[in-house]
Length: 69
Image 1 (tube, helix red, strand yellow):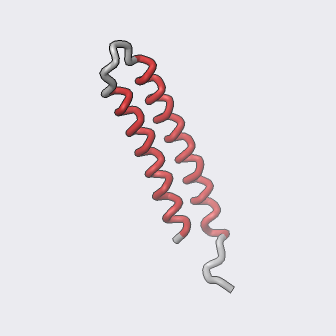
Image 2 (cartoon, rainbow, N blue to C red):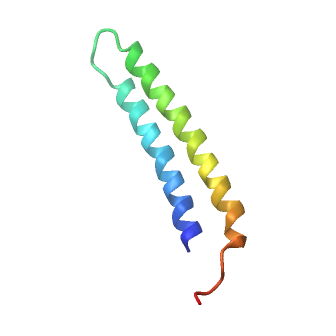
Image 3 (cartoon, rainbow, N blue to C red):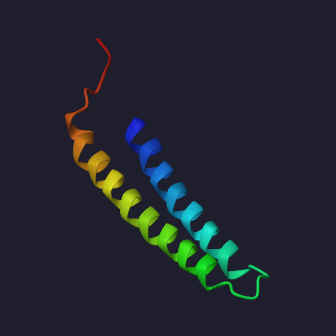
């Protein structure tokens, strides 16, 4: 159950990175290139970090006890 919640949070992290990227794209500033760059960087970092955490959760799942003592 904890593994499933953790994987859902990894997916949520990627969606938040996409949201930051979309905010940069929708910027009404004349020079919005820095906003788009920051949004793209946030998207890439969120995908990498979310994937890394997902791998950690995926491989540590079988090591968790199946019942409480």
